[in-house]
Length: 216
Length: 216
DNA sequence: AACAATTTTTAGACTTGTCTAAAAAAAATA
DNA sequence: TATTTTTTTTAGACAAGTCTAAAAATTGTT
Image 1 (cartoon, each protein chain N blue to C red):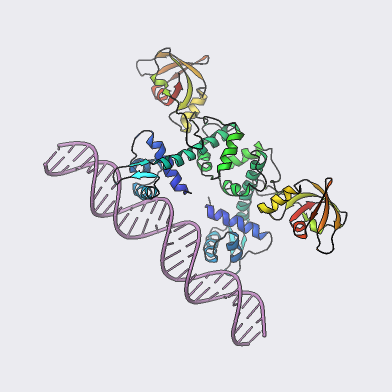
Image 2: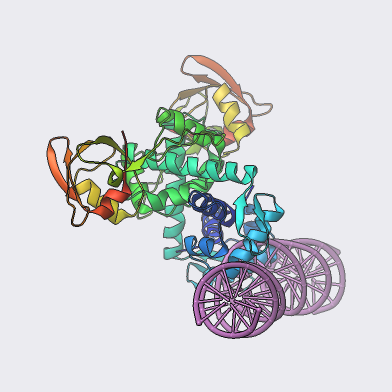
């Protein structure tokens, strides 16, 4: 098995890999609030275990094995988040830190039972897909609301920003997962948008429109 | 907050304190599968934090603060065990190791919600009492079946031995928490006992009779 | 192409928790 | 009481993971 620190590195590298093909030492250091020198050490260790590909000064990528482990941790994280929201009635902005601890509980049987207990959810409370035990999941095609044109419609299905502040704002505006929206106006001046959200009208900034994701 | 190792030491010292007033270095080492030298180091550290009372060569006792922390961990352990058995349908002999990890999840709010979700259970699946957030709980008076005389009755309410093997044996013999028993015979030769357990008849050894606890 | 700025790595140190081997204290025994 | 046995502590070492400061490599700029 891998240590807590190793698991956190693999997870961070996985998330960073979604934006860039290769992940730099500094990127990892920033993501984990640690120093570049520490990252170099750990990255060498993970490369020795063949969980990542690493060439000095060239950044890292996950190997197939490393990616699978990262996805297993992410699977656990998202299942626990679902549990916390659906069973224990936490709000979607409250669960991240707890899931950050729970994701490291090792028992596979526990995760299987938890999955069954919740009837095999496919998405966590923020709309992120929950991988299966093999790390497989269909990555649905989400687009930011900002990419919509006038009168286009969609269903809110995810967020690009997971910070509590953003999630609380969305909750207050009723901009939550599953809501149907329609773009009723786009303000040229600042690219802000007027949305119709199941009856009510909401005005969102360009910033929000970029971080709120929909399926059409 | 305390580290994982510190929490495990406090918990071990608490459990050992139930049998002895003062707990020795070797006892702790045995309980945690570590070496006496390691215990001496950690014990000095816990004494510095005023979680235990420690005089060289004299063994240790928990301070009020240390005991409270130990009981909070035990509370979490037992609540998680209850969850695993009652919600995820694990057997009572399968949950210890998982609870051993889950008990270190830090969120107090999580424990409050979990407690509420399960409607505030008072005992874990093995009959052990679940302390409240302040570490308080009524220690019910349990006695081993071995202490009963002919024709006396009781309700199975706890076990003194928590090993999977013993628990599996009890399960197979239907000797589970809540069952009403009556001593219908005591074999002089080996002090084994014949029990009537809700209709059926079971023969248990002296060894089992000492480790199976009842209330009258 | 040469210099400056940035990124990454190396070197050496520190903390936590562990270990072994040896010394010291306490307990048991004769 | 003296001696042996057991327990506990000390001393020194090690692995994991982190850090700072300095060196090396890469990238950017004129």
